[in-house]
Length: 146
Image (cartoon, rainbow, N blue to C red):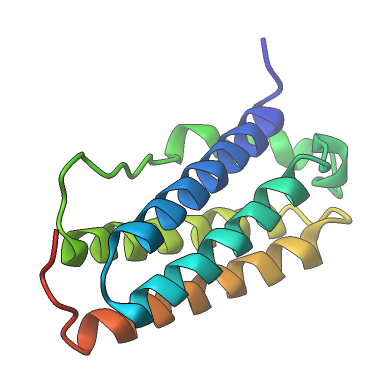
């Protein structure tokens, strides 16, 4: 059986890879120059996140080994997927939800108190900043293109 913390790390890395692909795809598909730039930048940031996650081990996460036993974090993870053929405004909503879910996950990982806690706090803050940027584009009335 896979270590629960390793399962969470693998899940997080896979979600970052999916986010990178999602943003790169939309950066090429959209005709809106602001969204194209934003999604290109976010794709690059998500690439960096999953590369960071690839080097973190469960022992980097837990200050006190007994903390992991009560965590049950893996059961609370939610996948947020985009369906084929969504419009840009729907893609922005999916992106906001993904960024918020990632921020919550990284906050939970930071709460474990291991040596990677500062990194996870920083990643949570960055994901929330990504969400704010996407919200700004959405609130400015992004065209409803396909």
